[in-house]
Length: 155
Image (cartoon, rainbow, N blue to C red; front, top):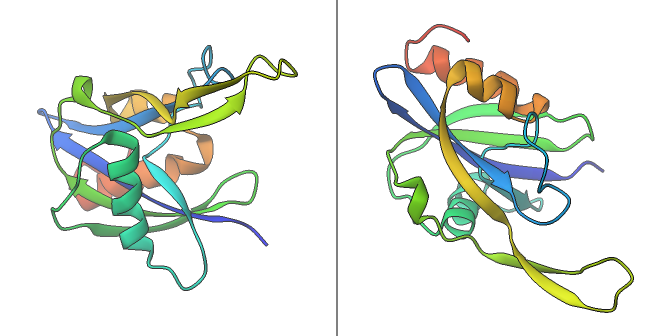
């Protein structure tokens, strides 16, 4: 069965729509850029609330509690089969002040040493066109839905 994630596309108007994307931390993602960025999101199980999960993951990955109302953007299916439920929120944050939670892996591989890495190593606002290049391709339809929602047409 496919895993499910829920996340939030934070956006701001400057004067065009800009969306907040996060870059995954850790050695695997260090030199990856196009297609590697994502909305802040995390997995949830059947019976758990998608909106509550999205808010929790936003707080864990950015260190900021989001209390503004969310607007549902629906679901998309990523290449690996993961279903992502997304919400939109108009909010402007200082991306230099994010504080992500961490995860631990054996690094270097087969070294016996464990290292901590941030789940998100950076967050940035991007104009819709640039965000379309940066974001995981399975999440691109969410950018079009956001553009329609806020009256910016499509990318």
